[in-house]
Image 1 (cartoon, rainbow, N blue to C red):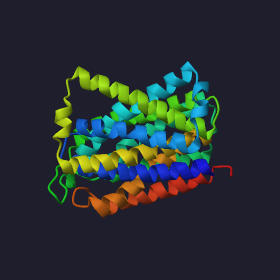
Image 2: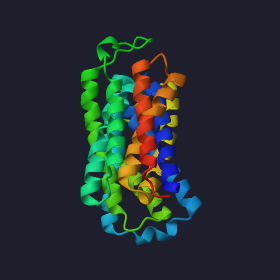
Image 3: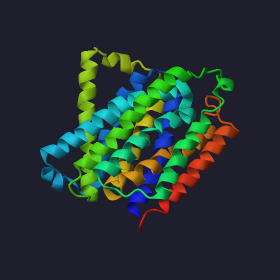
Image 4: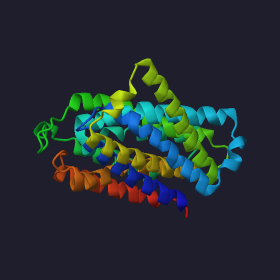
Length: 303
């Protein structure tokens, strides 16, 4: 039950993360959002480690686990996050979800072949609905090129960034799952901590390589900094719940539920960014299909 709750909470929080990010990149570039958001994961996971007293088993992790968790962190929090944020910049948070959802196919395919997770007929129908629903959201895009605030939707570049993000988001949970030798709550939290530490070191390397100055970040628009900070905390919290869920229930359950963040993206987008998003009947119909798909997946969990 805890795994299911964490998967759903992760989906909701991840949607809030993307909604806040959408507002932030109206005032600053995507690469600055990565520099601000990634390090915030460190205090979030340190708090979780302290709260659960997980330090005592940190030394029990072996080198293979460090490699799996570290690789997942770099792929997801650096490359996947950058590609995902570029998708949001191009299409908005509401319409970015459909393409990013395709990472689900990668996760479920390898979950079945590598981890021998059972895939039932209802499972397949549920996943089909979750993938189909966001595809419907992208229908009729020729008539939806501009938001009410005048922001142009860049569908061609959005598709490219979205597919790149989907690949990263599809691979990263497989690496996390491969690193679990046991499924205790403490190990899942430490897995997230190692992932974020690895991502932070890689980020420092990238900043040094491309000579990104700290002054450039300090002079960032204060409105962007506010929204990126909110994004960082929301995103880190979403990942905390996601890692816990991956440690407790199968990938083939966690990832489809996690992808239903598209539902909450629409809700939060309407509440906060309605002038900067495209939300219409077609989008709402796609959301309804996602709800049905998530419900069918929940029915597959053995309580």
